[in-house]
Length: 476
Image (cartoon, rainbow, N blue to C red):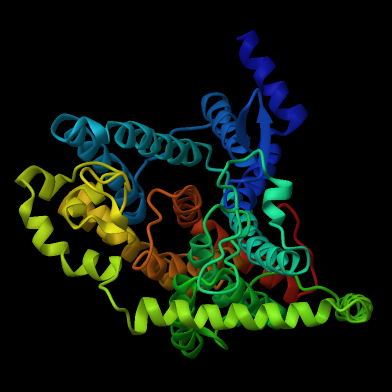
């Protein structure tokens, strides 16, 4: 009894839900930045890992001491997410039993992930904060934008100083932290990641978001980031994102308005003026010391290199590329497997086992490259036909639920999650993002958003009505 009273006082004094929302927001920002962290005793610990532990511990504390146990699996998205994570464990168990022992490290290291995400989904569901989904969405979009912006700064810094900015600032993260990729001409910058392809996973989301809000500066950032990263996944994903936006615009724009606060126009004008003045001042300084010429030449080489990369990947090639093998041989390789692997998969991290005979990337024997370079095919072999079907249903129901919600209200939170899903679906056709942290967590908080959507609509309508009659409503 005394312990319970102390717990209640602790909750009241420190308002733990508010603290948890801050952690959720920061988790959204840094989940896309695995190289940002600290080194402890010779071991690197990313900032997101620290935040994830705090989020997990805080959610568990609130769930045990202040949460109620509502009905779980309330919607089809939640059911499919739970089912997909659970089913992936079946594939891992089969892989551990039947596959060559060389694959065990992949299976064991990846086996923890589905369990972590199932538990986090249940804890977030029990806490049922109602505002965490909004905080995570805001942080996630900010993280996307910061990554794109940083990739540009990386490129400019390399042009001027011929050195990797990430290697200079984040050398403790990994030996692969972000050595500048000098291929195809120019470089490939990767933002706060270790691989430039990660830019392709979220840049289309920023494009969709920028188009909706008519934020031209974000489109400029995306275009420059596309050039500096040379991500063909981002290029193709952006085309699809624009196509989806055209359809989305015809159906929804003009009918609904985003519910958010707008800045004062004079304030924005002042910021733009100061920013423009700063840019002009920097330009004059760079022009005098010859840096502008270096930048122009460097950007030109990036564009040429990007054209070469696109041509070699998608237009013509002397040899059949990896993706052509992946897709072209998917069905034959699937039916070569035993019935258990065909239906249930061989476990997360083992999809390349089905393609070992092709010696892709020159690897002989048991392929050490754990996953094929396309998420959908990876899940087909990792989780089998059943797991793959559940995953496709998960994405379908998530998109359908958001589109249905837009008929009532296009919230800022819903828009960010929809942008994320568009980028996620198309990028996973071209690259492997297997149980990637930001994708799994975004799905978890999307589920939380959908579970609390009706309350959000009511709050929106109350605020809208109050605004029409000149009242301010607090507490929402």
